[in-house]
Image (cartoon, rainbow, N blue to C red; front, side, top):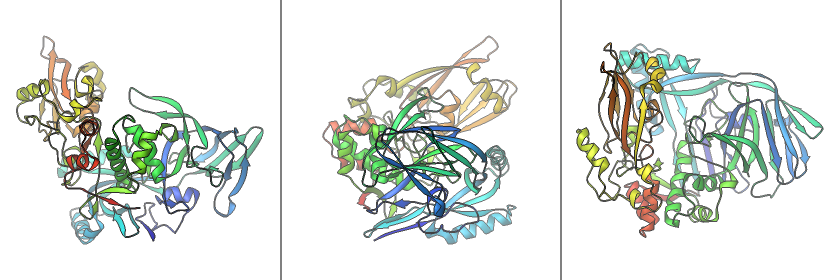
Length: 544
């Protein structure tokens, strides 16, 4: 027996009607289901486009329009399909400042907190429903929550300004939750050879009934935006391809894919397909858990539930699949990690550097008992209150954590150095209200030695704070991790001209160390032992 309950994201709507279709389905933040009950997950591939191109690997259908006005056009194998934006109007978004999230079991506490914040001078405070409840053959999960939003703004920039104000006057950290209040509208035109088809807000490509595997090539998929590996490539997909309008009124590409196909395309994109089976199985269970734990919580202002890059998990479609990773996915089908009765998060990062980190040190979350930072093998714990001792720990050559013992370990990832000239971060200093950089102070490290907060000071005595691991890494030109010590070059006046970073690890360090998991598997540890090491106390259950 399969059941599904959506919390709902579109303002002014309650729970969406059963089985919404097309554009309605995507914007409702709902799941569809395949003929055999497998969840079908909408994944955002591209947005902000005026034109998209496809090549069909097999016969397919072009779906024009939606609902009662939907019509189907048969297309031949090898057809080249081009979709172009002809006219559009942007939608409207609301950006809410969220201070707390309450599981549905604690909704009474959420209502009480809401009343308190309204009395404190936030009359527009409200509760936003997030997430889904999912059940199948007696095993299920409920990741629904009520987000307590203090206020909202029409633009993200305005919301960030309000966020800074709340931090300053109330000493309170908030996150921004975006919700659609009015959907975009427009006209999409499709050209196949000399034929043209006019549609409204939606066009779609669907494989022939019964076809399994890749049926379409998407030409020029952008990846790695904002990173050194940014580029474009052609990718093959198996799920139904939806072309709709994003919030700005431009074309968005969404692939609605079976959950297990999504996991099968994610595991080889996130790990090494030549890794031992136990490591790939651990990655499959972690990826599947992350897939379901994030549904309904992250992309309320977009027509998808997940995206295909590092913001959620890297998913490169059918072209990334490999027999080794397929076997790992098939042998763990439907298996998820639970924290007691609650679906767990199963975060992972490339290389922890010798010690993993607490989840609440990296993100604004409640502490999770299964995501506590710990040593990745046998070595001394990193000193947290003595940078000189921490530097010696970073430089230690005798240490052999799992992520260094692995054959997939890399010297440039395990231990790294960077030099950043202050000229390279001048614009960022200006955005913080600083004229230059005179000094800094590290105001706390996590259990792994990763920096939690860093205060910067300029020559006029003005200060600014960098909070949490990822903003710190990004500020200093995309550092590999926040587990580092730093020294400065100065000019004759004492002004900092360059910063020298020496650190360990690659990524946030929470949960499973992927290279460490490979090291454990190479040492003949089982998938159960790997998961127990990185997610202490978590249990594995089969959801479908």
